[in-house]
Picture 1 (cartoon, rainbow, N blue to C red):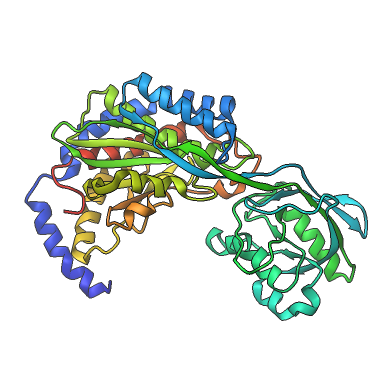
Picture 2 (picture 1 turned 120 degrees about the vertical axis):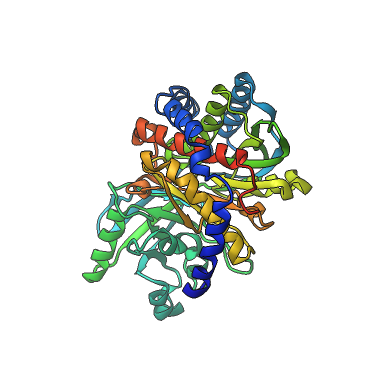
Length: 460
């Protein structure tokens, strides 16, 4: 939108706002009660401890995810949430198996690594080959098939932000295989490392050979690159037992506070219950699941029953398939048109900053009006530092219903250290500050309740 067009909407939005009390005025008391309850709450942290310490990591198809689904549904029922259901979701079932990476020349030395999700295995004896190190796809293409064929390609790509750098993790194996590489390695997608490899999803392309793919620590990637730059050939031996089994049964977990006046209209919020098969999936994304869940429960405990139905959904399989979000859209069916908003928290539980809003296909005046309402809610969250409301937001799990025009809202934190722990053995409960987690719960509680109770729908 150009500046002149945006400014032309401002008087209309202001006039509209003057015809009713502001959301800030209307919900100041309710927000205060929710924030106060969240900042002294112990129940959410108890859930986090159980999910992380008693269940642990939860990759799609694993026993850990099965236990998490069963426990979450049982807890929601015990707490008295309404309409608790676990709609079936078929999820991919990738198993890591044993794996290792060893430098064989110029010296024998172990290399810190994690296989990438979806990778194929090596032969039982492993793959031993010389390394070609590149820092971009342009360098790979410039090297050409003559230098790539028969080599292990290492993408030693410096951190340039997650969105840009992750492209080498997801697509690097295909690009290398097209030029004859026998395996692909990627420098872990992180700005900071303590020799900690970061896993994540990779993909293959039809018609291109499937080669094994793994991530190595930043330190090992840099060491290999330095050796090669000094004129020393580096040989590695990669062994991986990774395999993909038939799809497994899993489920989304859903619970509600039924609306008192418009129960057919829905605000859904949540996170994804699955994680990678390392660490505990604490930041990513037990924190999002529990903050949304506990936020709704606090409203129930305070007797704050909104006009509309306030729903929590713990989506499965965000990490390596996005099946949970697609299954939710199918399960919702025609009721998707009754979704007033969808809120996703999937950026960790560092100190909250606010929320971002997107409405696909909305007219500029609709977006401006909705964002204005979000800003009114934001005022209620300024005291906890979570009041910044901006255009642009959403989430992977709510993407399918956003494509039907449902307003999508993405939770945002300060994000200072999230990618240091992301997809690693270090994503454990001790990385979450308890009071920061409570602040996130408060932000989710206030936003969810006001969206579900405000007189008009967000985008009306």
